[in-house]
Length: 186
Length: 322
Image (tube, rainbow over the protein chains, first blue to last red):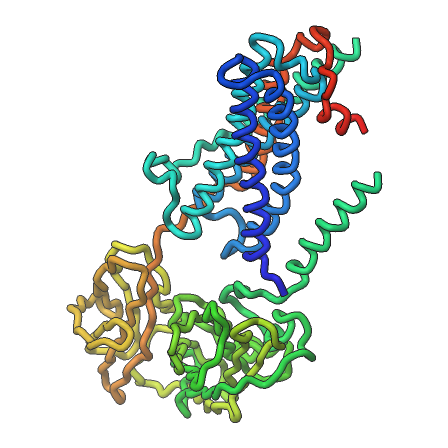
Protein backbone atom coordinates (compact mmCIF):
# COMPACT_ATOMS: atom_id res chain seq x y z
CA UNK A 1 0.00 0.00 0.00
CA UNK A 2 1.35 3.39 -0.96
CA UNK A 3 1.17 5.74 1.99
CA UNK A 4 -0.14 9.30 1.67
CA UNK A 5 3.33 10.61 2.51
CA UNK A 6 4.82 8.83 -0.52
CA UNK A 7 1.97 9.97 -2.76
CA UNK A 8 2.49 13.49 -1.45
CA UNK A 9 6.14 13.42 -2.49
CA UNK A 10 5.18 12.17 -5.96
CA UNK A 11 2.37 14.67 -6.48
CA UNK A 12 4.45 17.53 -5.08
CA UNK A 13 7.29 16.74 -7.44
CA UNK A 14 4.81 16.68 -10.32
CA UNK A 15 3.38 20.06 -9.35
CA UNK A 16 6.65 21.77 -8.49
CA UNK A 17 8.41 20.35 -11.55
CA UNK A 18 5.65 21.60 -13.83
CA UNK A 19 5.62 25.02 -12.23
CA UNK A 20 9.41 25.26 -12.42
CA UNK A 21 9.29 24.47 -16.15
CA UNK A 22 6.48 27.00 -16.57
CA UNK A 23 8.65 29.59 -14.82
CA UNK A 24 11.56 29.09 -17.18
CA UNK A 25 9.21 29.18 -20.17
CA UNK A 26 7.50 32.37 -18.95
CA UNK A 27 10.91 33.99 -18.55
CA UNK A 28 11.87 32.92 -22.07
CA UNK A 29 8.53 34.12 -23.47
CA UNK A 30 8.92 37.47 -21.74
CA UNK A 31 12.43 37.91 -23.11
CA UNK A 32 11.42 36.80 -26.60
CA UNK A 33 8.40 39.13 -26.63
CA UNK A 34 10.73 42.03 -25.88
CA UNK A 35 13.26 40.87 -28.46
CA UNK A 36 15.90 40.21 -25.81
CA UNK A 37 18.24 37.39 -26.83
CA UNK A 38 15.37 35.32 -28.25
CA UNK A 39 13.15 35.77 -31.31
CA UNK A 40 9.58 35.23 -32.54
CA UNK A 41 10.16 31.50 -33.12
CA UNK A 42 11.15 31.06 -29.47
CA UNK A 43 8.20 33.14 -28.33
CA UNK A 44 5.67 30.75 -29.84
CA UNK A 45 7.41 27.73 -28.33
CA UNK A 46 7.92 29.29 -24.89
CA UNK A 47 4.33 30.59 -24.86
CA UNK A 48 2.87 27.12 -25.40
CA UNK A 49 5.25 25.38 -23.01
CA UNK A 50 4.65 27.99 -20.29
CA UNK A 51 0.88 27.72 -20.36
CA UNK A 52 0.71 23.94 -20.79
CA UNK A 53 3.16 23.43 -17.90
CA UNK A 54 1.21 25.88 -15.76
CA UNK A 55 -2.05 24.08 -16.52
CA UNK A 56 -0.52 20.69 -15.73
CA UNK A 57 0.90 22.05 -12.48
CA UNK A 58 -2.57 23.22 -11.52
CA UNK A 59 -3.96 19.74 -12.19
CA UNK A 60 -1.32 18.16 -9.95
CA UNK A 61 -1.84 20.71 -7.20
CA UNK A 62 -5.13 19.34 -5.72
CA UNK A 63 -3.59 15.89 -5.47
CA UNK A 64 -0.60 17.38 -3.64
CA UNK A 65 -2.89 19.25 -1.26
CA UNK A 66 -5.10 16.18 -0.58
CA UNK A 67 -2.20 13.84 0.11
CA UNK A 68 -0.47 16.54 2.14
CA UNK A 69 -3.48 16.85 4.44
CA UNK A 70 -3.71 13.05 4.75
CA UNK A 71 -0.05 12.66 5.65
CA UNK A 72 0.28 15.56 8.05
CA UNK A 73 0.34 14.64 11.74
CA UNK A 74 -2.47 15.72 14.07
CA UNK A 75 -5.86 16.98 13.11
CA UNK A 76 -6.76 20.20 11.38
CA UNK A 77 -4.51 23.09 10.45
CA UNK A 78 -2.70 23.62 13.71
CA UNK A 79 0.60 25.20 12.67
CA UNK A 80 1.35 28.67 11.28
CA UNK A 81 3.44 27.17 8.48
CA UNK A 82 0.44 25.12 7.30
CA UNK A 83 -1.79 28.21 7.24
CA UNK A 84 0.85 30.13 5.30
CA UNK A 85 1.15 27.22 2.88
CA UNK A 86 -2.59 27.29 2.32
CA UNK A 87 -2.68 31.06 1.78
CA UNK A 88 0.31 31.03 -0.57
CA UNK A 89 -1.07 28.08 -2.55
CA UNK A 90 -4.42 29.88 -2.85
CA UNK A 91 -2.72 33.01 -4.14
CA UNK A 92 -0.71 30.96 -6.62
CA UNK A 93 -3.84 29.12 -7.76
CA UNK A 94 -5.75 32.37 -8.32
CA UNK A 95 -2.89 34.04 -10.14
CA UNK A 96 -2.24 30.99 -12.33
CA UNK A 97 -5.93 30.71 -13.23
CA UNK A 98 -5.93 34.41 -14.11
CA UNK A 99 -2.88 33.95 -16.35
CA UNK A 100 -4.46 30.96 -18.10
CA UNK A 101 -7.87 32.59 -18.59
CA UNK A 102 -6.24 35.79 -19.89
CA UNK A 103 -4.20 33.77 -22.34
CA UNK A 104 -7.25 31.77 -23.41
CA UNK A 105 -9.42 34.84 -23.94
CA UNK A 106 -6.84 36.99 -25.71
CA UNK A 107 -4.87 34.36 -27.57
CA UNK A 108 -1.22 34.66 -28.54
CA UNK A 109 -1.77 38.33 -29.35
CA UNK A 110 -1.32 39.00 -25.65
CA UNK A 111 2.45 38.82 -26.31
CA UNK A 112 2.25 41.60 -28.90
CA UNK A 113 0.81 44.23 -26.61
CA UNK A 114 3.35 46.37 -24.66
CA UNK A 115 1.67 46.04 -21.27
CA UNK A 116 -0.04 42.69 -21.92
CA UNK A 117 3.22 40.83 -22.43
CA UNK A 118 4.72 42.36 -19.29
CA UNK A 119 1.76 41.45 -17.09
CA UNK A 120 1.58 37.95 -18.58
CA UNK A 121 5.26 37.39 -17.88
CA UNK A 122 5.05 38.84 -14.38
CA UNK A 123 1.82 36.96 -13.63
CA UNK A 124 3.27 33.63 -14.74
CA UNK A 125 6.51 34.20 -12.86
CA UNK A 126 4.58 35.38 -9.80
CA UNK A 127 2.41 32.24 -9.72
CA UNK A 128 5.47 30.05 -10.11
CA UNK A 129 7.31 31.96 -7.39
CA UNK A 130 4.41 31.58 -4.98
CA UNK A 131 4.26 27.83 -5.61
CA UNK A 132 8.00 27.50 -5.05
CA UNK A 133 7.75 29.40 -1.75
CA UNK A 134 4.85 27.10 -0.81
CA UNK A 135 7.02 24.07 -1.54
CA UNK A 136 9.82 25.63 0.49
CA UNK A 137 7.42 25.98 3.41
CA UNK A 138 6.69 22.24 3.12
CA UNK A 139 10.39 21.51 3.49
CA UNK A 140 10.60 23.80 6.50
CA UNK A 141 7.58 22.10 8.09
CA UNK A 142 8.64 18.49 7.54
CA UNK A 143 12.43 18.73 7.72
CA UNK A 144 13.03 22.00 9.53
CA UNK A 145 15.02 23.54 6.72
CA UNK A 146 14.71 24.65 3.11
CA UNK A 147 16.74 26.38 0.41
CA UNK A 148 14.88 29.65 0.92
CA UNK A 149 15.90 29.86 4.60
CA UNK A 150 18.64 32.27 3.50
CA UNK A 151 15.93 34.92 3.06
CA UNK A 152 14.72 34.51 6.65
CA UNK A 153 11.08 34.65 5.59
CA UNK A 154 8.60 35.13 8.47
CA UNK A 155 7.06 31.65 8.24
CA UNK A 156 5.62 31.82 11.76
CA UNK A 157 3.71 35.03 11.15
CA UNK A 158 0.21 34.46 9.74
CA UNK A 159 -1.36 37.47 7.97
CA UNK A 160 -4.91 36.38 8.75
CA UNK A 161 -7.66 38.84 7.91
CA UNK A 162 -10.86 39.11 9.93
CA UNK A 163 -13.72 37.15 8.41
CA UNK A 164 -15.70 40.25 7.46
CA UNK A 165 -12.74 41.53 5.45
CA UNK A 166 -12.24 38.19 3.71
CA UNK A 167 -15.95 38.08 2.92
CA UNK A 168 -15.78 41.62 1.52
CA UNK A 169 -12.80 40.74 -0.69
CA UNK A 170 -14.61 37.60 -1.81
CA UNK A 171 -17.77 39.48 -2.76
CA UNK A 172 -15.80 42.21 -4.57
CA UNK A 173 -13.80 39.61 -6.51
CA UNK A 174 -16.91 37.69 -7.55
CA UNK A 175 -18.63 40.94 -8.57
CA UNK A 176 -15.56 41.92 -10.57
CA UNK A 177 -15.49 38.56 -12.36
CA UNK A 178 -19.21 38.70 -13.12
CA UNK A 179 -18.98 42.24 -14.48
CA UNK A 180 -15.98 41.32 -16.62
CA UNK A 181 -17.87 38.32 -17.95
CA UNK A 182 -20.85 40.49 -18.86
CA UNK A 183 -18.51 43.02 -20.47
CA UNK A 184 -16.96 40.34 -22.66
CA UNK A 185 -20.42 39.10 -23.74
CA UNK A 186 -21.61 42.63 -24.48
CA UNK B 1 -14.81 14.28 -22.83
CA UNK B 2 -12.97 10.94 -22.72
CA UNK B 3 -9.91 12.77 -21.47
CA UNK B 4 -11.91 14.08 -18.52
CA UNK B 5 -13.06 10.56 -17.59
CA UNK B 6 -9.51 9.24 -17.80
CA UNK B 7 -8.23 12.12 -15.69
CA UNK B 8 -10.90 11.61 -13.03
CA UNK B 9 -10.29 7.86 -12.98
CA UNK B 10 -6.52 8.20 -12.63
CA UNK B 11 -6.93 10.77 -9.87
CA UNK B 12 -9.35 8.52 -7.98
CA UNK B 13 -7.05 5.53 -8.37
CA UNK B 14 -4.23 7.55 -6.87
CA UNK B 15 -6.19 9.10 -4.01
CA UNK B 16 -8.69 6.45 -2.93
CA UNK B 17 -6.19 3.72 -1.90
CA UNK B 18 -4.58 6.09 0.57
CA UNK B 19 -7.99 6.90 2.06
CA UNK B 20 -8.88 3.23 2.52
CA UNK B 21 -5.54 2.21 3.96
CA UNK B 22 -4.64 1.81 7.61
CA UNK B 23 -3.26 4.71 9.58
CA UNK B 24 0.52 4.52 9.13
CA UNK B 25 0.83 7.81 10.98
CA UNK B 26 -1.29 6.51 13.85
CA UNK B 27 -4.64 7.75 15.04
CA UNK B 28 -3.28 9.69 17.99
CA UNK B 29 -3.69 8.97 21.66
CA UNK B 30 -7.20 9.08 23.06
CA UNK B 31 -10.01 6.90 24.40
CA UNK B 32 -10.68 3.81 22.28
CA UNK B 33 -12.22 0.37 22.70
CA UNK B 34 -10.14 -2.71 21.90
CA UNK B 35 -12.07 -3.03 18.65
CA UNK B 36 -10.00 -0.10 17.48
CA UNK B 37 -7.06 -2.50 17.62
CA UNK B 38 -8.60 -4.00 14.53
CA UNK B 39 -10.76 -1.21 13.19
CA UNK B 40 -7.91 1.27 13.06
CA UNK B 41 -6.20 -1.18 10.76
CA UNK B 42 -9.17 -1.65 8.50
CA UNK B 43 -10.75 -4.96 9.51
CA UNK B 44 -10.31 -6.74 12.84
CA UNK B 45 -10.49 -10.11 11.07
CA UNK B 46 -7.27 -9.29 9.27
CA UNK B 47 -5.29 -9.05 12.53
CA UNK B 48 -2.43 -11.38 13.29
CA UNK B 49 -1.01 -12.12 16.73
CA UNK B 50 1.84 -9.93 17.82
CA UNK B 51 5.04 -11.65 18.94
CA UNK B 52 5.46 -9.06 21.69
CA UNK B 53 4.72 -9.87 25.32
CA UNK B 54 2.24 -7.63 27.11
CA UNK B 55 2.11 -7.46 30.92
CA UNK B 56 -0.22 -5.34 32.96
CA UNK B 57 0.55 -4.61 36.59
CA UNK B 58 -1.58 -2.93 39.22
CA UNK B 59 -1.79 -3.04 43.03
CA UNK B 60 -3.86 -5.89 44.46
CA UNK B 61 -5.79 -3.47 46.64
CA UNK B 62 -7.10 0.01 45.92
CA UNK B 63 -9.44 2.22 47.84
CA UNK B 64 -12.73 3.44 46.49
CA UNK B 65 -12.39 6.89 44.91
CA UNK B 66 -8.64 7.13 45.59
CA UNK B 67 -5.86 7.29 43.06
CA UNK B 68 -3.68 4.38 42.12
CA UNK B 69 -1.36 3.52 39.26
CA UNK B 70 -1.49 0.84 36.57
CA UNK B 71 1.24 0.11 34.08
CA UNK B 72 1.59 -1.88 30.89
CA UNK B 73 5.01 -3.20 29.93
CA UNK B 74 5.64 -4.54 26.44
CA UNK B 75 8.74 -6.60 25.75
CA UNK B 76 10.10 -8.12 22.57
CA UNK B 77 8.74 -5.14 20.65
CA UNK B 78 8.22 -5.28 16.91
CA UNK B 79 6.86 -2.27 15.11
CA UNK B 80 7.04 -0.25 11.92
CA UNK B 81 9.81 2.00 10.64
CA UNK B 82 7.94 4.94 12.14
CA UNK B 83 8.20 3.22 15.53
CA UNK B 84 4.54 3.68 16.41
CA UNK B 85 3.14 1.27 18.97
CA UNK B 86 -0.39 1.59 20.36
CA UNK B 87 -1.03 0.70 24.03
CA UNK B 88 -4.56 0.00 25.34
CA UNK B 89 -5.59 -0.13 28.99
CA UNK B 90 -8.87 -2.10 29.00
CA UNK B 91 -11.44 -3.40 31.45
CA UNK B 92 -12.12 -6.51 29.31
CA UNK B 93 -11.29 -7.85 25.88
CA UNK B 94 -14.79 -8.02 24.43
CA UNK B 95 -13.90 -5.42 21.83
CA UNK B 96 -16.60 -2.88 22.64
CA UNK B 97 -17.52 -0.96 25.76
CA UNK B 98 -14.30 -2.12 27.33
CA UNK B 99 -12.46 1.04 28.31
CA UNK B 100 -11.63 1.46 32.03
CA UNK B 101 -14.21 4.21 32.24
CA UNK B 102 -16.88 1.69 31.17
CA UNK B 103 -16.08 -0.21 34.37
CA UNK B 104 -16.12 2.89 36.53
CA UNK B 105 -12.43 3.85 36.56
CA UNK B 106 -11.42 7.45 35.91
CA UNK B 107 -8.13 8.03 34.12
CA UNK B 108 -6.39 11.04 35.61
CA UNK B 109 -3.21 10.98 33.52
CA UNK B 110 -0.82 8.69 31.71
CA UNK B 111 2.93 8.79 31.42
CA UNK B 112 2.78 10.12 27.84
CA UNK B 113 0.97 13.24 29.02
CA UNK B 114 -2.60 12.36 28.06
CA UNK B 115 -5.77 11.32 29.83
CA UNK B 116 -6.96 8.54 27.48
CA UNK B 117 -6.81 4.75 27.82
CA UNK B 118 -5.04 4.50 24.44
CA UNK B 119 -1.49 5.77 24.09
CA UNK B 120 0.56 5.87 20.93
CA UNK B 121 4.22 5.68 21.80
CA UNK B 122 7.11 6.13 19.41
CA UNK B 123 9.64 3.36 19.96
CA UNK B 124 13.29 4.08 19.26
CA UNK B 125 15.42 1.93 16.94
CA UNK B 126 16.71 -1.10 18.83
CA UNK B 127 14.40 -0.53 21.80
CA UNK B 128 12.80 -3.82 22.86
CA UNK B 129 10.83 -2.77 25.93
CA UNK B 130 8.51 0.09 26.78
CA UNK B 131 6.29 0.86 29.75
CA UNK B 132 3.29 3.15 29.90
CA UNK B 133 1.78 4.12 33.25
CA UNK B 134 -1.71 5.35 34.00
CA UNK B 135 -2.88 7.12 37.14
CA UNK B 136 -6.49 6.12 37.74
CA UNK B 137 -9.17 6.81 40.30
CA UNK B 138 -10.69 3.60 41.67
CA UNK B 139 -14.37 2.79 41.07
CA UNK B 140 -16.87 1.57 43.65
CA UNK B 141 -16.21 -1.43 45.86
CA UNK B 142 -15.64 -4.72 44.06
CA UNK B 143 -13.12 -6.72 42.07
CA UNK B 144 -12.05 -5.33 38.74
CA UNK B 145 -9.84 -6.92 36.08
CA UNK B 146 -7.62 -4.70 33.94
CA UNK B 147 -6.07 -5.83 30.68
CA UNK B 148 -3.29 -4.48 28.52
CA UNK B 149 -3.31 -4.69 24.73
CA UNK B 150 -1.20 -3.39 21.86
CA UNK B 151 -1.40 -3.04 18.10
CA UNK B 152 1.19 -2.20 15.50
CA UNK B 153 2.18 -2.65 11.86
CA UNK B 154 5.18 -4.30 10.30
CA UNK B 155 8.57 -3.01 9.27
CA UNK B 156 7.74 -2.77 5.57
CA UNK B 157 3.97 -2.35 5.92
CA UNK B 158 3.28 -5.30 3.61
CA UNK B 159 1.73 -7.71 6.10
CA UNK B 160 -1.43 -7.71 8.16
CA UNK B 161 -1.72 -5.55 11.26
CA UNK B 162 -0.74 -7.14 14.56
CA UNK B 163 -2.68 -7.23 17.83
CA UNK B 164 -1.57 -8.51 21.21
CA UNK B 165 -3.05 -8.63 24.70
CA UNK B 166 -1.92 -9.55 28.19
CA UNK B 167 -2.23 -13.28 28.90
CA UNK B 168 -3.94 -12.62 32.21
CA UNK B 169 -5.52 -9.54 33.74
CA UNK B 170 -4.43 -7.68 36.82
CA UNK B 171 -7.29 -7.98 39.30
CA UNK B 172 -7.74 -5.06 41.65
CA UNK B 173 -9.75 -5.44 44.83
CA UNK B 174 -11.37 -2.08 45.49
CA UNK B 175 -12.21 -1.65 49.17
CA UNK B 176 -13.89 1.02 51.24
CA UNK B 177 -11.56 3.72 52.47
CA UNK B 178 -10.52 3.26 56.13
CA UNK B 179 -11.84 6.13 58.23
CA UNK B 180 -8.50 7.71 59.19
CA UNK B 181 -6.46 6.76 56.15
CA UNK B 182 -4.25 9.70 55.11
CA UNK B 183 -5.27 10.43 51.55
CA UNK B 184 -5.73 12.98 48.83
CA UNK B 185 -9.05 14.75 48.78
CA UNK B 186 -11.62 13.11 46.53
CA UNK B 187 -11.85 16.22 44.38
CA UNK B 188 -8.10 16.69 43.90
CA UNK B 189 -7.07 16.52 40.23
CA UNK B 190 -3.32 16.54 39.69
CA UNK B 191 -2.28 18.75 36.74
CA UNK B 192 -1.40 16.73 33.64
CA UNK B 193 -0.20 19.37 31.16
CA UNK B 194 1.76 22.62 31.28
CA UNK B 195 3.72 24.87 28.97
CA UNK B 196 7.49 24.60 28.50
CA UNK B 197 9.41 27.17 30.54
CA UNK B 198 6.73 27.66 33.19
CA UNK B 199 7.10 26.44 36.76
CA UNK B 200 3.99 24.82 38.20
CA UNK B 201 2.58 25.47 41.65
CA UNK B 202 0.47 22.50 42.71
CA UNK B 203 -2.29 23.05 45.27
CA UNK B 204 -2.97 19.66 46.81
CA UNK B 205 -5.89 19.03 49.13
CA UNK B 206 -5.89 16.10 51.53
CA UNK B 207 -7.87 14.43 54.27
CA UNK B 208 -6.61 12.98 57.56
CA UNK B 209 -3.08 14.19 56.75
CA UNK B 210 -0.73 15.84 59.24
CA UNK B 211 2.48 15.77 57.26
CA UNK B 212 3.33 15.81 53.55
CA UNK B 213 6.57 15.24 51.73
CA UNK B 214 6.76 15.63 47.95
CA UNK B 215 9.42 14.42 45.57
CA UNK B 216 9.76 14.78 41.81
CA UNK B 217 11.90 13.17 39.15
CA UNK B 218 12.42 12.90 35.45
CA UNK B 219 11.30 9.44 34.28
CA UNK B 220 14.00 6.99 35.32
CA UNK B 221 15.98 9.72 37.10
CA UNK B 222 16.74 10.38 40.75
CA UNK B 223 14.04 11.86 42.94
CA UNK B 224 14.40 15.34 44.44
CA UNK B 225 12.46 16.58 47.46
CA UNK B 226 10.64 19.92 47.28
CA UNK B 227 9.51 22.30 49.98
CA UNK B 228 5.84 22.02 50.89
CA UNK B 229 3.80 24.80 52.47
CA UNK B 230 0.65 23.96 54.38
CA UNK B 231 -2.63 25.74 55.01
CA UNK B 232 -4.86 23.33 56.91
CA UNK B 233 -5.75 20.48 54.53
CA UNK B 234 -4.31 22.38 51.55
CA UNK B 235 -0.67 21.88 50.66
CA UNK B 236 1.24 23.77 47.99
CA UNK B 237 4.59 23.13 46.35
CA UNK B 238 6.35 24.17 43.18
CA UNK B 239 7.59 21.88 40.42
CA UNK B 240 10.47 23.39 38.43
CA UNK B 241 10.07 24.51 34.82
CA UNK B 242 11.44 22.39 32.00
CA UNK B 243 13.30 23.79 29.03
CA UNK B 244 12.07 21.10 26.66
CA UNK B 245 8.77 19.23 26.18
CA UNK B 246 9.45 16.42 28.66
CA UNK B 247 7.47 14.74 31.42
CA UNK B 248 8.11 15.29 35.12
CA UNK B 249 6.78 12.84 37.67
CA UNK B 250 5.96 13.61 41.28
CA UNK B 251 4.41 11.86 44.25
CA UNK B 252 3.54 12.67 47.84
CA UNK B 253 4.16 10.80 51.08
CA UNK B 254 1.20 11.38 53.34
CA UNK B 255 1.46 10.99 57.12
CA UNK B 256 -1.34 11.06 59.69
CA UNK B 257 -3.01 9.06 62.40
CA UNK B 258 -3.63 6.12 60.10
CA UNK B 259 -0.94 4.16 58.26
CA UNK B 260 1.33 6.34 56.08
CA UNK B 261 0.44 6.37 52.40
CA UNK B 262 2.39 7.12 49.25
CA UNK B 263 0.55 8.35 46.18
CA UNK B 264 1.31 6.92 42.76
CA UNK B 265 3.74 8.84 40.54
CA UNK B 266 1.79 11.58 38.81
CA UNK B 267 3.01 12.66 35.39
CA UNK B 268 3.13 16.30 34.39
CA UNK B 269 3.87 16.72 30.69
CA UNK B 270 5.41 19.94 29.35
CA UNK B 271 4.37 20.99 25.87
CA UNK B 272 5.27 23.83 23.60
CA UNK B 273 2.67 26.56 23.71
CA UNK B 274 -0.20 25.42 21.49
CA UNK B 275 -0.92 27.48 18.42
CA UNK B 276 -4.47 27.87 17.33
CA UNK B 277 -6.27 29.77 14.63
CA UNK B 278 -9.82 30.26 13.44
CA UNK B 279 -9.81 27.68 10.64
CA UNK B 280 -12.99 29.04 9.09
CA UNK B 281 -11.34 32.46 8.73
CA UNK B 282 -8.31 30.85 7.11
CA UNK B 283 -10.42 28.84 4.65
CA UNK B 284 -12.53 31.88 3.77
CA UNK B 285 -9.41 33.99 3.25
CA UNK B 286 -7.94 31.28 1.01
CA UNK B 287 -11.04 31.26 -1.17
CA UNK B 288 -11.08 35.05 -1.23
CA UNK B 289 -7.44 35.10 -2.32
CA UNK B 290 -8.03 32.64 -5.16
CA UNK B 291 -10.81 34.79 -6.57
CA UNK B 292 -9.14 38.14 -5.76
CA UNK B 293 -5.88 37.24 -7.48
CA UNK B 294 -7.72 35.84 -10.48
CA UNK B 295 -10.01 38.86 -10.76
CA UNK B 296 -7.15 41.33 -10.27
CA UNK B 297 -5.03 39.74 -12.96
CA UNK B 298 -7.88 39.43 -15.43
CA UNK B 299 -8.71 43.10 -14.80
CA UNK B 300 -5.13 44.05 -15.60
CA UNK B 301 -5.21 42.11 -18.85
CA UNK B 302 -8.68 43.25 -19.85
CA UNK B 303 -9.41 45.50 -22.81
CA UNK B 304 -7.07 44.13 -25.42
CA UNK B 305 -9.07 41.15 -26.56
CA UNK B 306 -9.91 42.79 -29.86
CA UNK B 307 -6.34 43.80 -30.63
CA UNK B 308 -4.35 41.60 -32.93
CA UNK B 309 -5.08 38.16 -34.31
CA UNK B 310 -4.02 34.75 -33.15
CA UNK B 311 -0.69 33.61 -34.41
CA UNK B 312 -0.75 30.89 -36.99
CA UNK B 313 0.60 28.12 -34.71
CA UNK B 314 -1.44 28.85 -31.61
CA UNK B 315 -1.43 25.31 -30.15
CA UNK B 316 -2.57 26.37 -26.67
CA UNK B 317 -5.75 27.99 -27.95
CA UNK B 318 -6.55 25.06 -30.21
CA UNK B 319 -6.13 22.59 -27.35
CA UNK B 320 -8.24 24.66 -24.96
CA UNK B 321 -10.98 25.08 -27.51
CA UNK B 322 -10.89 21.37 -28.28
